[in-house]
Image 1 (cartoon, rainbow, N blue to C red):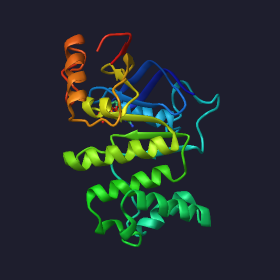
Image 2 (image 1 turned 120 degrees about the horizontal axis):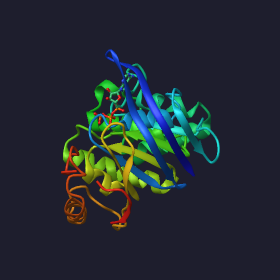
Image 3 (image 1 turned 90 degrees about the vertical axis):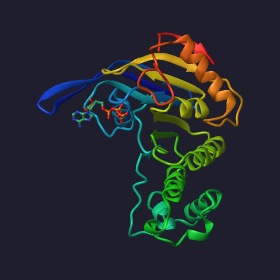
Image 4 (image 1 turned 180 degrees about the horizontal axis):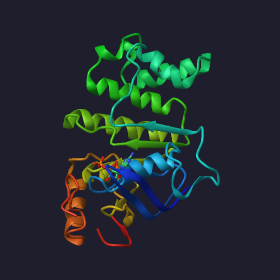
Amino acid sequence: MLKIDIDRKRYADRGGSPHVALSGLNLQVGDGEFACVVGPSGCGKSTLLNVVGGLDGDVEGRVRLDGEAPGNGVGFMFQEPRLMPWLSVLDNVLLVAGRSAAAKARAVDLLVAMELGDVLQAYPGRLSGGMQRRVALARAFVIEPKLLLMDEPFVSLDVPTANRLRAMLVELWQRCRSTVLFVTHDLREALALGDRVCFLSGAPGRVVLDLAVTLPRPRVADGAAVLELQARLLAQHPGLLAGLAGGNGCAPGRDDG
Ligand SMILES: Nc1ncnc2c1ncn2[C@@H]1O[C@H](COP(=O)(O)OP(=O)(O)OP(=O)(O)O)[C@@H](O)[C@H]1O
């Protein structure tokens, strides 16, 4: 169980004055659950991931993964693939997996599953943007993370590539059963991926709607079921989804979708 209780996250200096990014943000994510966090630009989504992952410890509050501060079992995937350009595809993944025979076998297995088996020795500069994200996805899962934190990992990809990567992510998650916290400003993406979608308010961010998504899988972000649910949410919560891609505006409480 991931338990997030952030009383306040304040930046001392945002260009000359302090800024409270998060306030009264409470969220629990069950083991193996896929939780998406959506919210308008600047509401503190990346800040939340940095705090949860322990990259930023300057916070009033507490984050616990199975009762302890999140540590080694946490994987990250960011907006940029952040691959080492001087290392081959395989070595990029081995960098986090280690050099044992078992680690290498796992890395190759994942890269083959990501349809990258024929470019194991290629350097990242030779790969397309979508291929680089697939390497980053394999690298994120190779440690079989207990908790995977994802910050808009498929942003600025074309629609078919993003849909393919989302399908690959769900397949890996179903195989590994990691707990996932996935940040996006794209409501359709969140509805396509999440067991739950948590909506944050504008700054300072806090959870204003916690929605269980019960649509059957597989789902596609631009598929009929997702579009229908999106339209229903827009009708139920006018104004709340403002500022989201694919949305217009949320209300306190818990809903079933
Ligand atoms: N290191 C920092 N120092 C000062 N202020 C910061 C810092 N990092 C973020 N902020 C501020 O905190 C607020 C939240 O930023 P954050 O990047 O978490 O938002 P976000 O919801 O992820 O935004 P976006 O969707 O646009 O990526 C913003 O107003 C930002 O300017």
